[in-house]
Length: 285
Image (cartoon, rainbow, N blue to C red; front, side, top):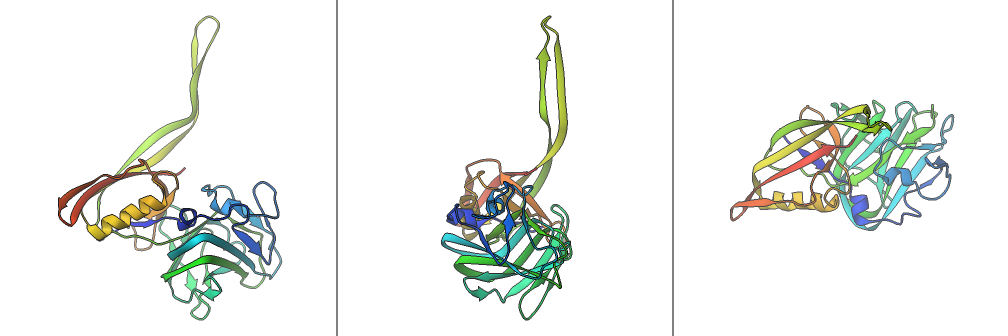
């Protein structure tokens, strides 16, 4: 079972929050009602909150750009909580002014379920999604400060395009598979008790949720893989930023949105160039 990490380098590099990301060709409405300024909904670490692009019945492409503070090397893009299938749209990726022409695979579907393969046009690397939800596209690594996701209509947009999160980065798959243990944490979002004037207590609770946690233990990890895992941890700044992970459960990617539980990594040295390490991650709900 191969585990693959997908951290977001956009926040790691940094960006001008007042201006980035931006859009041209179309008008986007943010969750706060703004129709100008930054597309903050795409980088707020909250996939449930979406922006809406005024595309319904139109044919003009929406060009979403993000300029980062320092150049980032990327080999994947994730667009989360979108309705590109419903809107009858496809997308493509550019770095700087150059199209990414090395798309290897692309998938779409539901977060937490095995994704289905998208169609990649071999000429323009245009990706037509098979489902709303989350999309992942992989390509040969490229480095730049400016990245663009261009959303176009297949014929005419059938609806306003909605988007939740934008993620760009470099994936990491350790050479050896970890031992994987999954647990569930049951919680009540609101719970407690009230006490009457006579001293009687009344308990209340509502909205129970089950939040998954995973413990990953590598009995062996090479020096190079240790460095790569540390890089993922640096990009997420420990538990500060969420990331996506695929546990290799299916023949196609099956993505979960998670965070590291702790803000430290502890490696145990086995030999000169070998280590063991355990990490615990928790599902974002």
